Image: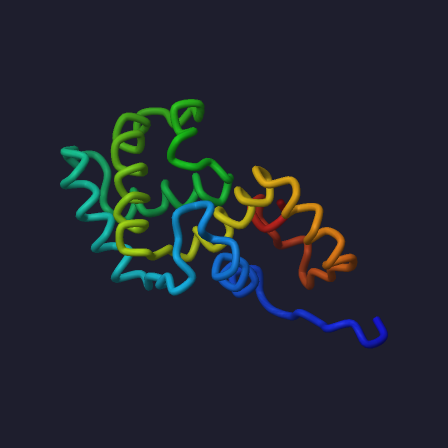
Length: 153
């Protein structure tokens, strides 16, 4: 690569650096916080209360997994109506957007947002995408066969 600068990192690390620079388009300031599991759980609990839903048939842990699955399929809160989520759809339609609002109000992301938001930005901002395509001409992904949809995109 000659004297070209080399960028290395995990998908999530790259996503965090990317969002520090370009996250404003999704409502983040550059000094956002990455919530750990406990902080994300507290935000989700507040979202459940805010959405006024009862989790009689779904635990908070299951709800966390459902939202994570949506984010890893690159389904943002505003597109959840188009997803076929079965019996949990009404709860997810109420809680997922409220959870996302909770995070943004705290200027925070969860671990899955580090993949969702960069992919969303690159899909919706073609000029930025073109610029970064030119900058990052070569990409090597170790263990490529183990990537999920969000990482692939």
